[in-house]
Image 1: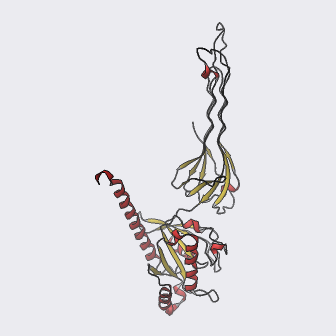
Image 2 (image 1 turned 120 degrees about the vertical axis):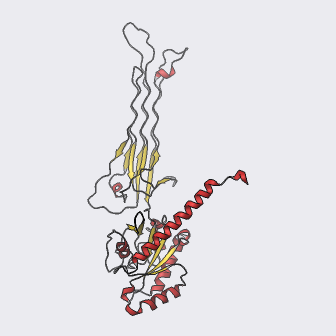
Image 3 (image 1 turned 45 degrees about the vertical axis):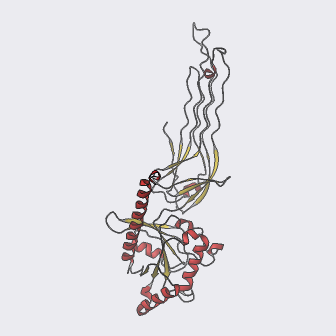
Length: 367
């Protein structure tokens, strides 16, 4: 049975929406038919009532090119097709069409009433069944027997499943940018990719995650995510809170962007960097333990004092991981940073593939 695809509704202004609730209902099954054969010269034709058709299922399907759940701000109720009732002459009812609802890659589906995580769709065209269809009822032909040649019994179709779902979008990216507002995250992602986020000289310019594809050579690329800046107390809801930190959960590498030349009155770079690390640990110990590189930005504003100030920040932070000194505005050091990130991601992929091969080759019986 061909599936009915739910068309995404056009919106004039695409706002980034990463969480929404929707109601879905699978199709009901058609009722079984009560009928007897009625033809000339056949006075006792017997039962010929057909079964009802099954209803349609509801699936969520991940589609590349959809980056937000904004469409669901308009349409929030979805219903698959009902099965048709059975008919005489042993005609079965037509099955209802399945409903395919297109969502962005990285969408997690949670049932609101039970908070059960039904699953998530992370690859193109991956589908997840979220509401099961009702089954068709039985016609009276099904109840014919040697002792009951004229049954009048049928069964109704069952109801399709109804669910209230919460859809949560977590963007899929290899590298995530972390830092205070106005640290230069948006400028950096625009310097190394084709992404063009809003850039201005005031805090909280970025109000939603931005994704950029960084090309580091032929057949070598990765996705970078820029999230709104954090401030101290974000875990308690200050500023934009940690609402967007979940978008870093699928990243493999974090870049901590630090403004090495903060404007007067905005505090010291070291104090701000420590505050961000504290908020990250408070939000998610797992995310805190993820590999993190320090990127000192805006060194072009320090002139001859750039190296000395960079050394001071690194020393006071007691940073032991990789450190990069860049100017996202002039693109100084950004290409080397992108190249090293690509190399590191390839090593991570290689190590993961090696572990997978070892696990597949492991034979417990040989121990």
